[in-house]
Image 1 (cartoon, rainbow, N blue to C red):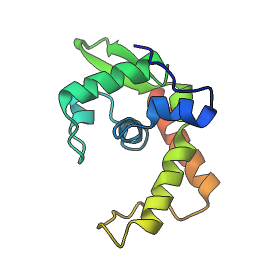
Image 2: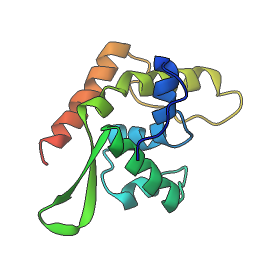
Image 3: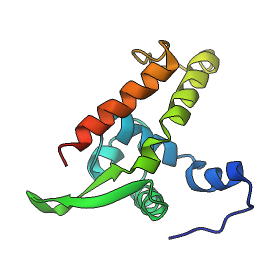
Length: 138
């Protein structure tokens, strides 16, 4: 499911993969909330349609941001896990969160995120460490 890129610009190339309305939210849910199954991800507050979720998961997998596997106890259910490439999006997720927290409160009731306004590099590292610890179970 490789897409055509609009140009060779690195920003444009990144946006071609994760710049749609849903991809960063899927990665956020996987990274921060440790969601791993189609059902868990589809139950997010934003209510992504199953067909769109399926397409985005395939896209993210094709660019090696996530991997799909099955757990031995349940061969029917797919488990989606972020790859190292996907985990490296943590600083972008944090920056978007900081920007939204600072600039969108006048327009929307923004949820508080514990630790978000602490030392940014520490917060990024703790999010990545938490996700990598969860990965040890797989």
